Length: 489
Image (cartoon, rainbow, N blue to C red; front, side, top):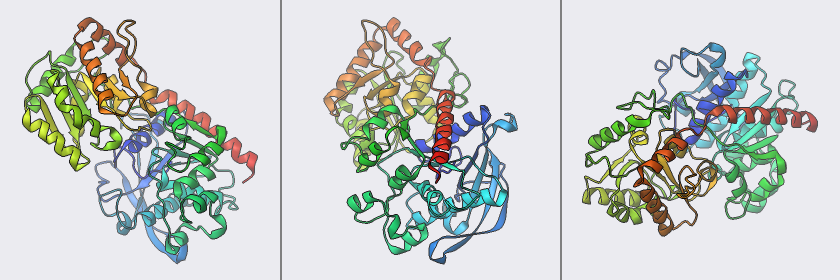
């Protein structure tokens, strides 16, 4: 697997969580997995007990551009796991390209990721480790799909290797132009995709290349799979997604239930589980005290752990936050994002500091305490490929309020108070009134303790582990191998 980010080593979003967990689930079921990522400057080799780097290798990209590199190596997963279930992880090390601590946003971003992909493939050849599958995640690694389809297709080392490409967020496509980058990527005019000419003015689109050139393509939830094959949500790539037919599938992400476990989570004041959830009340009281909120066990506490941006729906929440607090609710907000949305949350918190607490930043341990100590979890996304927050919240007995989109639609079922079924509160229209109505329904349900306890129990017993998803990925890999052998290229 090739990925720009892998938890816990370097993380910006859900991509890191997926590539930090899926390999462990695959290895546990008997597959041999190697994960590759860059060694950013913020990754401390001593903290993760990485083996000393092996240097002396050279990667040559187009235009004769060469970079020396080495590899730090280690094992993923807890030290007490059997080594056979701990995938190897390799870190491409080059101080010039990856010495900075940040993952994205540098002016030479494409060159960094082109180099990383070439180095990761070269690690395989240097070590004689011939993979059945190269699994590439998002645009940053899509160039490896292209090379394996074209540049390396006549290399006997790679001629039996199939490719899988996973779309985590179609909105980020890595489009680039210019002779220099075309040269680095080994893309010539005869290899340009029709969609690159038609939609992107001759620029290269790594995301499009991954979709067109991989043996099998998937995305991270069944509903997002359906959404992005439409012109409304396809980000200009809906046509090629539809053309892949049944070679494009949706597989729902999971969560690492060993990490996200209220029975063992070291960040919590008290531990609990689905069979005995009473201690969740202690975590609520501790969170209220930590954040300076009124110590009111009966006030419904709404948690937010998210980027505070429009994609996540917080432009809606900013417009109705005062109304929600007027209904007796409290807010615990953790995140950062759009300055206008941040300022609106600051305003609400300043006006009602005993009802609203806002931490503009990120703290993993505080995030866990918000998941555990809140009664409700607000995630009203404009679009959401999969989403992990709603699954983590349910694992902690915190009931999600979500918009029916992407993975949120696949994981949260709307609560019916008469039948007493469902696991959360779902709304459809992307507008503040619809969001407020869902919150109001949730607050009304909270006032019925017996029904609420059943709802919490039902949410906590949902299975969002990686085991089922890993089985689907294994089947996908088998399809990719068959497709590769059948196509002969």
